[in-house]
Image (cartoon, rainbow, N blue to C red; front, side):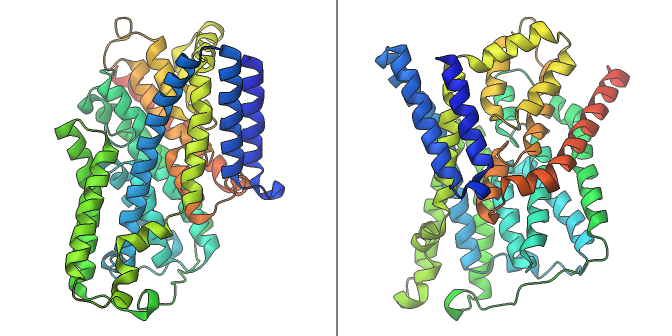
Length: 427
């Protein structure tokens, strides 16, 4: 059974990677892969109660991420429909692509630590559509946004799912992770950013033709500012909501979505239907890329079978026996997280290494937070931020491999080197 599961996963993964030449949508490959994996597992196990229980558990985790993604996308669409991003775009005066690249990289890096890497990617890529007319330019920016968002999320307890898992699990503390991972994470972002900015040197920013919004209707300054501040405020408030209530982030984003919907309906209540229809949340929901959400469901459910059948934990155990060195093992886990979702990988590592043997803020946990957070940037489907960018800007897997993966890999190893050096010097 285990061999069959691994083979099916590899074939499904290859089909996702070869989406463009095969002309088969990645969502179809992910769903077929997930269906086959769970079917093989159910038939081979025979314990229908256990499999149903595990599927329910996986679906709960997957649904939470998908609802969060849907809510964040809808909020961004509403802000966009009100031309809310003009609040930022009007203040960006640079005409050079390289200067804009530096600005976007640093904003993404620090915003990701406050929000999270997924939400930040959605917001920043939406912003790039308002600043850049050429799709080729937007692709490069999307690649850097993914790297910067993952690097920014790695050093913050609320910036990346895996760092949050380690924080909640007691493996790391907030202040210690910031002190140990901030500099390595910054280096892992700056090096790819510097190389890309150098490649784009001398090129000018080509701005899109300014329009009065959809259907030629211009929103008032009050409406633009209100929806922008409210939308961004809701996204920023989600981590605080989670900390105060201990409810999962998707509940906070759905609560915020309801508030935004209510405010939008009140603001536009005196307008004719034909004038306010494109400003409503109903319209925003219709614009969400459902194909990306479906792909997300498929890939997470597919990976869940590898988790439940202990293939991932067996891999971690094998690495421990074969390699032996903690730093090399964690580096490998980071690279593997570019192929397989980093959440089950970190979950497997948390199960493999006990807090008794490796107490809170041990080198292992801090280095794992860095590697699992930044390693996902090496491939476009290695992180939630990458998957979101892939859907929003229609990035092809092999374009990312050719243009961005090498940069992400160089940044990953440079940051790892800084982390190890810093640990050596400061103990």
